[in-house]
Image (cartoon, rainbow, N blue to C red; front, side):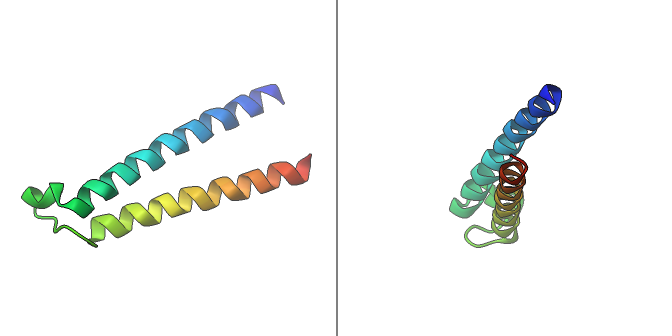
Length: 72
């Protein structure tokens, strides 16, 4: 049980880091930092891809918290 909690904490931290990276890339893509690589600024595919990934992480974490609350 304790080992399982530690794995959940590690997974939560990893998801937070991935989410922060996605938000950073999304922001940089929106302001046009990646234009030299052929990616247009603004609401590009890069922006929407990162926004979608971040949203999926948020939904997944919310579902896991709800499952944990129901168990306890």
